[in-house]
Every structure is written in C-alpha cells, then in structure tokens.
Length: 208
Image (cartoon, rainbow, N blue to C red):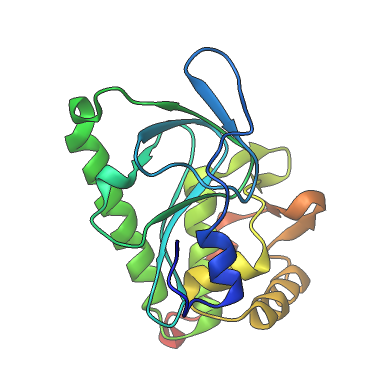
C-alpha cells in the first residue's frame, strides 16, 4: 500500500499490477504496458523497455533509468524506497536465479546510467535537457532505419516531462518545435524518427 499523500497519477503507478499478463515459454514472463515487474526478483529483459523510478514526499516521480533487452533489473539492485519497475511497452523477461553471478557488471551499468541521466537533468535549459535526453535514448535504444534512427519506446510526453523535470505542455511545444526544425519526425504509435543524430545536440553550447 502506498502513502496517502501521493497524487492520483503517482498512486496509480505505485499500485499498478505486478501480475504477468501470461506465461510465454518456460521461465519467460510477459507484462503489458503500464504494469509493473515484481521488485522482489531480479529480471533479465528479453524484449521491451522498462523505467525504474521512485518518488519524493510530494509524489513527484524521479526516473532512475531506462532499461531494454539484455539489461538486469530488480529491487535487489537498489536501496531506494519506494522503488518501481514500470513497463513502458509490453515486456518479456526471465527471472534470474542467482543474480550475484554478474553483479559487478550489472551495478556498473546501473551507475553509468544514473550518471548520464543526472548530467542531462542538471542542464539549465529545458530544450537542452530534452534534446540531450532524446540523443541519449537514440544512442542507447535507437534502431537504424532507411532515413535515420527509429526510437520506438512509446514514450509519452508526460513520461519525457517526468524524466527531465518539466511539464507535458512544455514537452509537446518543444517536440512540435523540433519537428518543425527537422530534428525529428513523429510517426504513429508514439515513435520518433531521427534523421541526423547531430541535430539532437543543443544549438548553442553557451545556452546549456
């Protein structure tokens, strides 16, 4: 049960279902979008994307990382309370019987991602934060396409706003601006096409 002071949106996330949608092959579990993986286990993501997060006393979400195929995630890898593993897309994952086997490399990756996200959210200007975040996500999860790089994480404007400490309205305005400038192309299903990665870097370093 979550604390009563959480806003309805945060409460909904905190109370999201942790029961897998169905079992796939032996050892593989499947979750639908916007559900949560049980943090009592350590999971290896097979397909899909997961956001690890916590929230402060005011109920504001704090994104700790974005994880994809091959990444290990679980409550045993964090000392934060509360702690949530939210599926950004449909996810398949396998439970790791002995997570200590690859603990060193897993923790290194966790620390690196926290550092990278921290460097992004510490940028002074919101447009610079969003550009850097999209650049980082494309480098990490982008799929090479005929006309650039496809980002298919189903990230809503609200999720992007939560990650960089902004508002959904501001993110929508910036996405429209970036599209008009030719930095990205919006596709169906909340997908983004990035024609040129260098166009996701801030326009003027002085303005960062």
